[in-house]
Amino acid sequence: MKKFAPQPGFTASAHRLALDPNAATVTRLHSHAGAARAAYNWAIARVTAAWRQRQVEASYGIAEDDPTPWRSWSLPSLRKAFNEAKRTDPRFAGWWEENSKEAYNTGLANASAAFDAYAKSKRGKRKGARVGVPRFKSKRKARLACRFTTGAIRIEADGRHVTLPRVGTIRLHEPRPDLRARIDAGTLRFLSATVRLDRGRWFVSFQVEERNELVKVACPDAAVGIDLGIKTLAVLADSDGAVTEVPNPRHLDHAQKQLRRASRVTSRRRGPDRRTGQKPSHRWEKANRARNKIHHRVTNLREDTLHKLTTRLTAEYGTLVIEDLNVAGMGRNRRLSRRIADASFGEIRRQLTYKTRRHGTRLVVADRWFPSSKTCSRCGAVKAKLPLSVRVFECDACGLVLDRDANAGHNLLALATRNTRSTGTGVAGDLNPTAVVGPKPRGADRKTRAILPGLPAGKGRAGGTIPSPRAGTEAGDRRQDTRTQLALW
Figure 1: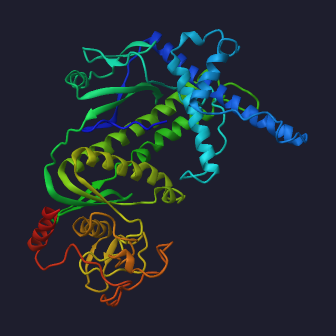
Figure 2: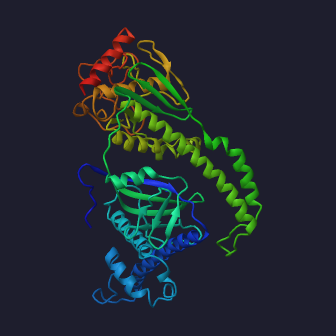
């Protein structure tokens, strides 16, 4: 299938709006989401039944030319088979006409994508973790969602209601007359709409094609190095020499007392048991909703904090430099995993990526092996080791004493004026990727750095020196040099 490409001057994006449906609309939304889940399970059963039958026939010694044929999992073939079976299959015959065809198409499309991911993962053509055979979706655990691609999908003239096929008109939690005005002006067009029950509230996400409208930033010639952390969420070192700390709100830690109390109440109720088939009591469901409400509040507070931070940064600076952190690997640290997940380093990078594109600014991602914390931001000397417990950087070569995170921020800022991308392999002193000899380091404590020609390694240095963003004797001279290099970009 041909991939969608927006027309020149436009880009594909999404707008997520909260809904306030009435009781009748909630029933229709639940019906559409349940229809999507039922169609998904039907497709999974249809394809895997042929696989199991072939395995049984192979165990009976049936020849390879005679077994049950494979069943295609492509979306057109699944849709054709479902349309033939929906009138006679007892699972759909009595109620399939109550919902839009888009509900069943949603489940079939998800099943087709699941089988494609499994096949590509098995052949080694898919990145990421290995994907297993698609499984059935549980009615109790499945996320309720449905996607509409055809039919009446619009925002009403009052900007307060949206209309979806077969579902009807739904009231928005907050009016959006701005979207309606852009539709009337021809700068925005709806492609599809997805309704989803998330954190106890129904949302609709409009996938749109909208005209590119670059928003001018406050300081297009300024740059900032962003060092993310747990003690302090972000340390910002800008090209004017200022260092700013963004405190970590730690929303999850502050809610731990309430979560412990809510979890204790929930554990004392009769909950569900899959082994015995026991259903949860109404008191357990009520306690579980109260516990989930705390989690939902923590998530909303975290999203609000991150959006405000990334919006402020992308609206102020023309160049932003961040690190390519191994967040998945950091999350395997049993002592810090909860706080790393609460800080959401990956979400910060994701938001900075699309918001800098929206403003037409530059985002520089430092290499994962770039020693931002172990490099002296004044002379470029690199320490062989710097434990995480050491919060103050002390240079053995020039005697610089500086906060660890502030030092890393200055080193990241240097990348904005040195290169438009990350510096080679990120090894200390590696400004030319082709000049590195030896394998790429696999651990921060391995001394595999090569010394570049012409860069002698002195005391306390491993791999030579790195040009410093703080070079110079006067702070005013340093700022002027940085500004000049940014203006040439």
